Length: 50
Image 1: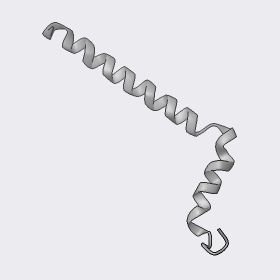
Image 2: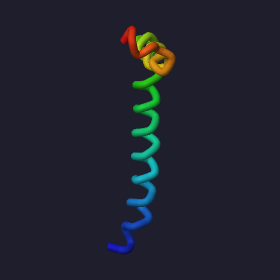
Image 3: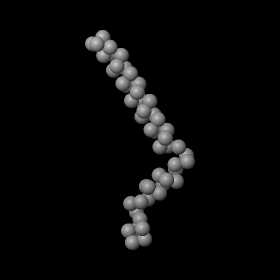
Image 4: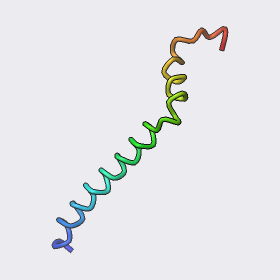
């Protein structure tokens, strides 16, 4: 089992970068731009007006 440790370490790094890249692409899609703009302005909204 110890001889497989370098392989698993490499696969873990590859998996992490694929996951990170997928999340980044999902978040940065142009179709989600309006949603992120509204979320960014949320802190500046007056609570009385909702």
